[in-house]
Length: 333
Ligand code: X2X
Image 1 (spheres, helix red, strand yellow):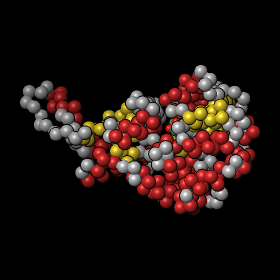
Image 2: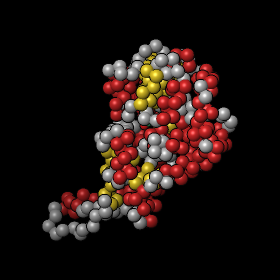
Image 3: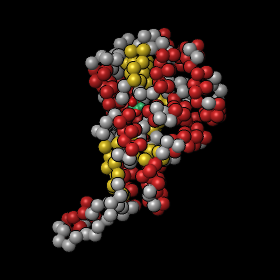
Image 4: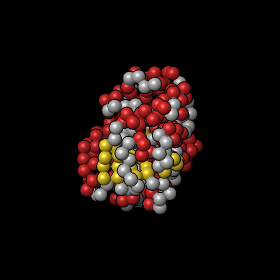
């Protein structure tokens, strides 16, 4: 909401005069909601960006962060950012795909071999196509995608040692048609739940398994309710930093560039944080009792191919988007 700035009233205590951000209302007073604990690099770097934006805008922009699903789960925050109830949200590609189907293109099973391929695609043609599609539903996506990570599978039951172990596995996946299709293709029994419900669903054994990048398993303490982790790297997932299109269009160009620069640069720093964590997080989770095993991606890929997964999603995404992905990663289907 845009508020008129008012001058400092005479007689305010000196402490308030010394802290103009507190003493006067900002011209732009915005809310940003996300689904992660405050210990995750996404929150930490977003917090830095918010402080930088306040500073560089001389207090004209005040963004308040609501972390950890305080405003509701992903589905709720997605509708709030569409209605303008909140100004910013960071949905995973999987989640925004419920609204913008092509946004799930980066999550095609076993598409990316490594981060070089990921950032080449997401900072290049694939990311540009997705942002274009996001703009059509009246949302603004900032240019640099933030890292969630390569997703790994954990379970409280027997270790997932290969694709055969997927048969009948009760596994939580995000609210994502692609995830449901992929895990059905692997023979599992997937259930869509918002992230806000995952810990308790695992604890009460509503589901036995879940899949997420290791930094999330760490900060959300999922190791407390899971026994083993299969390093599958089955999906690379990232977060789009999005703004309400209506609000964004009303922001003067000078402030747009302050906000965009701060958010995009924070996103690049956040990618570096996840890269750093990727080097240490497995040892930390092991020390907390989570057992790890490697898996052979070929057994999973073969099962997906046999289930028609690649053919189906090539059709659903369309030749153009699929072609952009294949430009980055090589032939898929
Ligand atoms: O819900 C999840 O699993 C998470 C945290 O990875 C997403 O935001 C998709």
